[in-house]
Image (tube, rainbow, N blue to C red; front, side, top):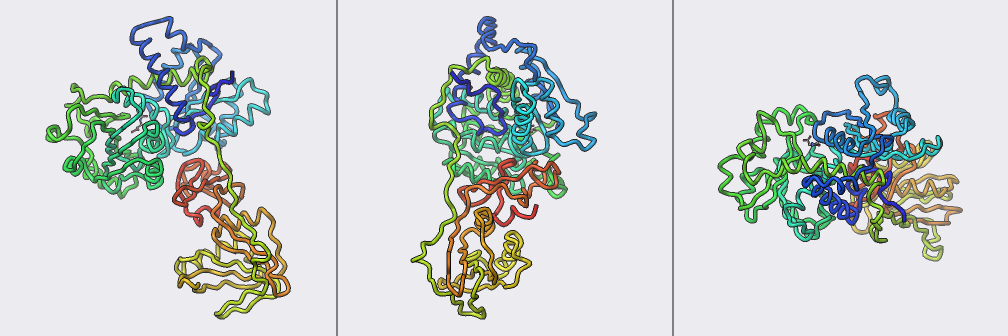
Length: 528
Ligand code: NCD
């Protein structure tokens, strides 16, 4: 039987399917029961019990709970535990992340736990170290666990949050109504909830944050795509004045270390909006539970300490569950448990390709040369790219035509650009280039990626010889001049790691970076 979890990386929560997560939680429940009742024989069923199973911790950002619960989880397995002291490593001498981690994989380590400001680092390392393991005939391909990357994701925190919520939801996957309070913009544990909470059939999310700390647009869109019902409020006070208050509240701390000067100056005011106060107690429903990934600030906690000794306190159990969750995760990656799980076909995260370049049949082409009413003359031989940025303003169209010329390498040729009004009274751009340029499939792909919705007319002897229409490609990758605009992303040119950028089209026609999840318009991904 194949083992689907062995040596698997967890870089974002969606690396595990819903069925896999549900299976995972049954295992955590079993383990927790065994530990709580000190059932040694049952605990041993989970133990890797192998001093050669190596776990490496690399924390390039501060951590207490995540780091220590992983370390204790590894000790439970009697595994080899290492830590890279990054202050004294060659990363500081300008070595690339893949060179550093390739080397550490070579020292027979099975799993890396990495926390970093660099978004998408684990996804990149999982690919590059996999290739390294293969060419050096290492016994196993190392797994990479994202223990929090910048303001991107924190998938193991998501697993322990979901587990704790399930304990309070009577283990029901039907309905969830949850309020999320705090720094929803920088909080990576919040981002992981956009796909994480899909384990529940019907999800209502109340987002409570002042404007400056509102959830990132891309994750809000993801929640909507996932069918969540969303309401937004600027403060706890405003929320409590609404109807239908959630019983489960998830708090996140203001992430001061990620805020710019402008927001930092307003920190007291922002904190005020997201801090729970004694006078709110009479306005919340009975049986409320509060969660928090922690830490909370000793002077300005948004969940004040007067709540510690109340039944609302679920954050302490949540932190304790962190170790159980991580024991099970290591057990699955090490192949000790999980061999009884068989995925259903439809759970596999498969990627469906779709065509986006269409040749217009010859008989449908107007075989006469195109006639343009205003100012421009038909060309005898060459190309006409039409319908560029249909519906945008003339200045937007003009500036984008400059980029198209550069990307398609037409900027050294004769010819010109024109903005015209089409029959529906909207503006569109047209690029003319006399000459004999042919388009390869790769160039057609570039054209579709930089000018989706355009048509390309190849003109020969005054007639349209061939014509193509383009749509937005489902994926854009494999071009050297692409780059993610998020400077904290591993695939940003500024990072200097030479990781080729890759983007997926989202339901709202944005291009989402495969590494850091940042959404871009099709115009913003060029110019690496
Ligand atoms: C969180 C983190 O680091 O993202 N904490 C954690 O892992 N327990 C939340 C935070 O830092 O506020």
